[in-house]
Amino acid sequence: MLPRGAAPRGPPPSGAAPKPPTSAAPTAPAGGAAAASASTAAAAGGSSKVSEIAVAQQALDAYCTPETVGRYRLHKLIGKGAYGAVYAAYDETSGSPPRKVAVKHIINAFVSPTDARRIYREIKVQAHFNAHPNIVPLLEVIKPRDPAGFSHIYLVSELMETDLHRVIHSRQDLTSDHISYFIYQTLCALKHIHTAGVLHR
Picture 1 (cartoon, rainbow, N blue to C red):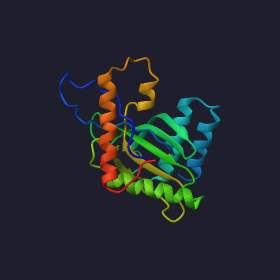
Picture 2 (tube, one colour):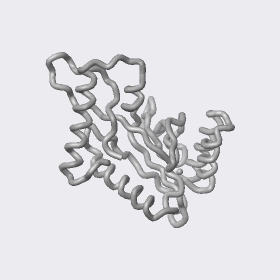
Picture 3 (spheres, one colour):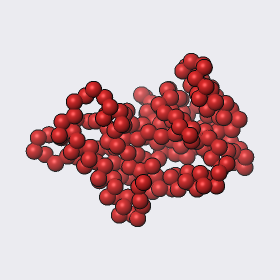
């Protein structure tokens, strides 16, 4: 899950070495019975986006410990896949205006031992590389209300406004400076994780 494609922040000044800003990220997925219903509603697509977010928010609040309820306010669904969904959210405890974050909802994390190991590895690796400017930092693993019986996981990370896939397929003209800048950021992240003995597939 590391590193991500770089978000477009404009080419570096002509003749200057590109600075390594934070790279891009998306990702995927879930909580208890309420969390499962949230993912089902999102997959069905029958309800409106507003109601999907409301159901997902309800599932998140049901999953959280009482101290965490209401801290993360889901704003919109930004991606979903086999493991679950990713939501743009606001951290209501971060001041005014609230900080934008990404909440990754992983459903049924422990059904498959193989998937459980992959998820655990992702959390450990992402937490280890939190300080690098080109790797999306893991801000929090939300504690479940029921630590003995939870089956879903919520991860909170920095929110990137876009990702490299969207940039490539957008109508924005990419100059050689843009391309060099994005490749530079990606190589910086890869160099960092490879130095630590971690391989990115």
